[in-house]
Image 1: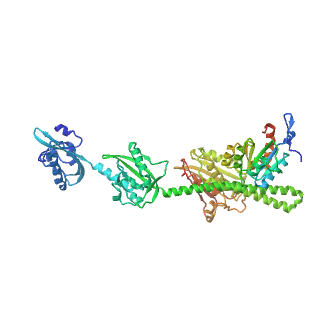
Image 2: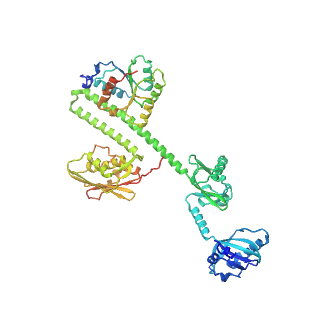
Image 3: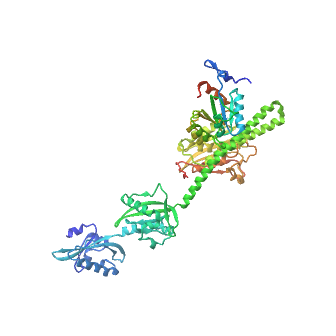
Length: 473
Length: 157
């Protein structure tokens, strides 16, 4: 028997009927930090704190009295006592055996410090979780809640624990939920609850609110538990609805702009053409000049409508991605961009090719490089376009040696219809607003640097290298 | 006015200009837009009879011969705008396709809207083509050219 005791993975002490230790194993020595000799012949109660000794004695007697019945693993949690007075949580089991030398007690001791620590950690995680958490036992009774759950549902902890989980649902959903719960118990897995349907919860005051619930099965000694993480999505739903409406409005606006604004404008242009034709030579220089001015304005208005449409669409991130090599992309832009003789454009690309929506990025860079040329005040200019990898972003700078942008105007240039140079009339002044919207819709940032009183402006674009998935409405 | 050079070009055995005339039904609520189609075609030497309808409902009445002073003779084509009051282009197409007498009508959409949704809807009602006005060149020159070319190789119902 000594050998069996010695090689047990738990601490084992064998005592005589009077509770004095006869035999113990190495694990028990290790656990309590005593040598075997110090313990043999001593009462086993020496190993637990004073306050548990009477209880333990009773336990021992109870085990002894159930003679004939082997009191297998009479589980009882208490503390062990080290020599230096430090206590640690243990679990013991007492078994009675009958030997030729009379009745003996075998006490098995398990050090449960680690388990306790994990339990406490678990407790703290649950308490500190940002969402409401509720642990439910196999019978659907609430076993544990955190403060977030209390405040979400308006119940105090004591009102919840031990009661049926279905108390947190509207009456009409309770029966169905109980069935779902049984289904889950048969097939437990970490999953989102009710992915394809709206989940509704009920507060103490009877009011209802939409929730999202994540389910985590937790295996426990006393059957299977389920930890539910619950998020109140009232605000999110409201925001989603708002977003959907905003998108629908934008769609309608785009449609109206493309048809209801463009068609009459086209009509006006046609009418001007016909008037010009009908007048022929009779028009006279003044009328001809003014008809020309009308035509110019019609064309400009047409471009404004196109730009507005482009702007309206730019708020939606494109998911039409491809491998983009900036060297090629920037080269392509510069090749077709009209520019005066004296302009030199230097391109330094150190960024590796990456997968991203090409069209919006190209639009942004074309706008920035085009602006640098268009708004330059001298006949000769130098523009530097640099692209570098910066962590998750690709940083692209477009720096010119133009007149610079006064500090007071720097915020304004990103707004719609803001053109600083009075003479520049060939676009509607939407380029930067469009660029900013495009960059931001794709998860990037755009900023400008222009030192006060100095020449030159640098636009800095941070474009995500990673594929960025925007929130979907 | 001299006919445009491509109008007198020889195609096979006969001159294009000699081909029998088709009729056009232009459906557009904007009278200037309708006139622009007419003027554009005339300017480029296409002298087919043109009937104008103000919206889908008006167009159906014309096609069904319910309007005494606006009758249209076969063979004819319909040039259809989409955004119109009372009955818009798509509604007109649905009505047209459910009418056994008119369901085979050849319709081209002629509009200012480049909307993808409009295009999808129009083609699902079996239009023969979808044209955006701004893509047809100055004074719809592209339209006149297209219709003449179309007539040389296509037979209408």
